[in-house]
Image (cartoon, rainbow, N blue to C red; front, top):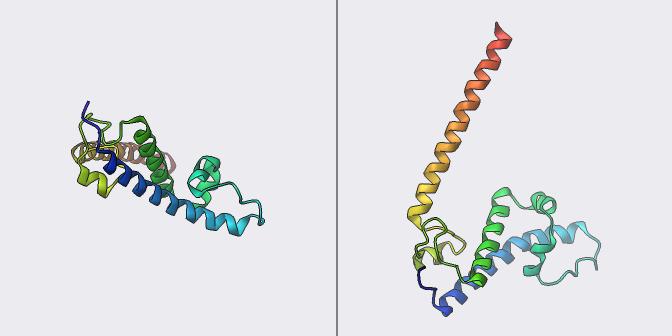
Length: 144
């Protein structure tokens, strides 16, 4: 297993993760202010609110990508607590610090992310062509 990150660097990256998390939750907080009676919002710190919010409420305010990003941030924060942050989940190699500073929630090295992305694209492409062929068969039923 690769060596853990320097504690100062880990703290810096954790702060970046928390800042991004708070900015996403502030978007949700603005929605809550508009939709709930005053006084009911005292649930605690914004950073603690994520665990209190159900998926349905999030999806009505945050886009699918923002929800995914929030989940990735939570996962990265958990990895910091577990001591596995900065280790690629696909290769078990150390993720370069420059990449972590650019995308602190990333679970992969750039090399592994590219491979995973290509595999995902192939899977999606195959699924699309399967759907196209099945649609073609359905259409022929209507026109025969």
